[in-house]
Structures are given as structure tokens and as C-alpha cells.
Length: 130
Image 1 (cartoon, rainbow, N blue to C red):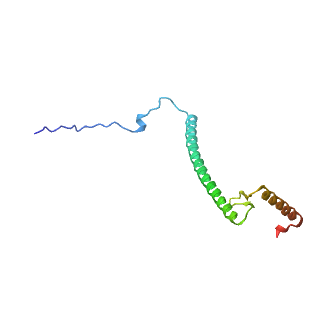
Image 2 (image 1 turned 60 degrees about the horizontal axis):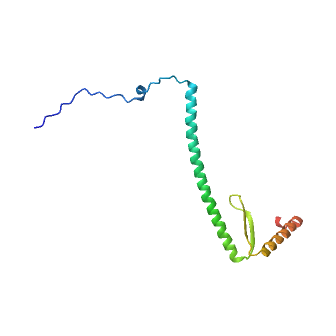
Image 3 (image 1 turned 90 degrees about the vertical axis):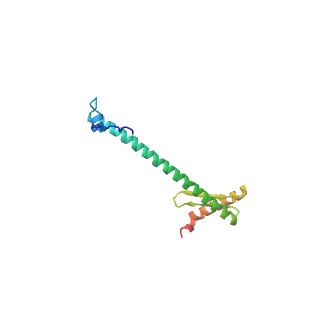
């Protein structure tokens, strides 16, 4: 029969409290503590700002891709009905948008001349204000 191991009743466990294990060897002034606190805060704040900026850039890039795809689809649809055209205005975000399609330089010149006539007529008669 194997012998039974005898255990001691007195067990001591070292304290793991941070108050007792770390004793400052150098005195730190309140100003130094404030400076350390500010450095830590700035580091954490900069990290959060970087994360937010990265997220915004990713979302903005995706938004731009969707907008360009949609404008490309609009241009393709208009091209089915018009040989040459010029569409200008503002999108829902308030950004300027210009869509144009010219098959030849002659078509572009004709549209530019037409725009000149429209602008001059608008200045003289204000026919677009109705």
C-alpha cells in the first residue's frame, strides 16, 4: 500500500496586491503625474481619431464608387435616347455634376453654341425664371 503524502496545514501565499509590490523609489510631483496623464490621454485620443478617420475614408470611398457607378448608368441610359448631350446640375449631396457625351467635335461645338444662345436669351428675357 502506498504511503500517504503528508501536507502541511500552514500555507503561505505571497500577496499580489499592487499597493505592496510596487513601491516608488523616486517621488513624482503632481505636475509630472499630470504630464504623464496628458501623454497617455493624447496617445489614446490620437488612436481613436485615426480609427475614425480610417472608417470615414473607407465609407467615403465606397460612397464615391457608388456615385460614379450611378452616374455611369445614367449616362448609358441617356445615350440610348440622345446622340450628344450635356447634363449639368447638383447631386443630392450638393456636389456639381456634369455628364456629357459627344461622338464628334462637331457635336460638341454645336452644343456649346446652343448653350451660348440659351445663356444670352436667359440674360435678356429671364425665360428660365418661370
